[in-house]
Length: 486
Ligand code: UDP
Image 1: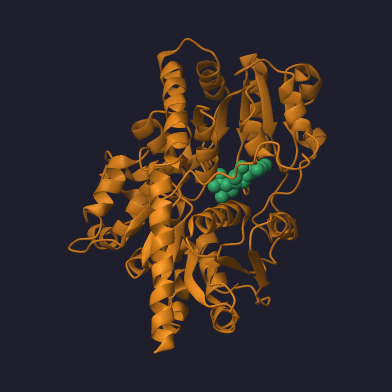
Image 2 (image 1 turned 90 degrees about the vertical axis):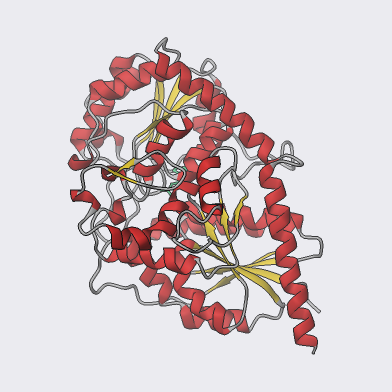
């Protein structure tokens, strides 16, 4: 008989997909009995650019030597009516796959040990329940977002209006009071996106467990508050498995190495900790021209070295930026004037390899959770420039809880606008400056690197959590095996 398989249902956008695949591979490595992974792939036809990036990720993983099978689900018609925003679109897109997921899972030749799904996919809990399969949620964000999601159904009743209009702070267990103006973008107003996140928060309570890409030592008070049942009145949340940082790491010297990317070759020629990286995730990096000018001004006047990943406009029918035409976007003469100390990269950049390079001394980031963990994994201090999703909450946590970042004034009411002088100030503070805030952020980022590395080493908190999860999934399988046999 075929090995049992763990079915993964990712959200097929690069940040979510890569993280879940890496988590799945780590799980396989901890299982006492042989197991495989089966990944259900949804066809996100709204962006050819994104589909091609996703196809690349899948190709690489299919050749990775792990026992992973990719099952491509049929294409669905994209949701259009009552379009309420990105989260609403994504959740309804996933929801349309219910029948296909059921057919794929129930028709598998391998026994299914468990289903692990991205937190955007909780509408599919109805399918796993029908098939009587244990289901785990995989959260690509941190524990702060988990605490918020679990608490959101109660918050929905507590607050009458929108966060956007609310003065003061929101009480999230285990965190200092969070200013309401820093709540995640999709829940700033009580529209369809808000309703879906309340829905997810409620459905999380049905999961066998919640796997979180975080490190227990980075968010200890939040995880303790969740475990103590402080998020959902009168109810204890499912067991949380902090298994991070789930940062894909290349095995050193394993097989033939691809040629070095141009960005990495450029970094190799720069002094240690001298370069500020600016990169804004899979959907960011595309700015209107007034903002591009402010960034260019800041970089030019700071005098520091920089690597700036600047993307082109986002087409109306997609959420994904195109490659940038630098001659059109940048101020005249900028590239020439900064050519000895700066590189502007106009497309997808190898961010993980860039952050691993010792020349990088600071990271201006949109605060996507993967980017945060990749940075901390290498001990690189940050400047938060949150743009969308839960990034404003992450930015608050980086500064006020972890202390690994230098705060920057971002005008959320003006499309997250940042002025040149402010960006220049934080770059100077972060890269080798003598300011107290820069020194503290660098020190804390070095400590965070140490915590991250210890967590995934033998006996570390994330390693122990992963083993516990693998054991539990194995036990479900044994239990099902016994019931199937009777
Ligand atoms: N990324 C990259 N190159 C880019 C932009 C992004 O490699 O030019 C990677 C980055 O390393 C991270 C992921 O894409 O692994 C982005 O995930 P994150 O959670 O930071 O943000 P999201 O894209 O989900 O908003």
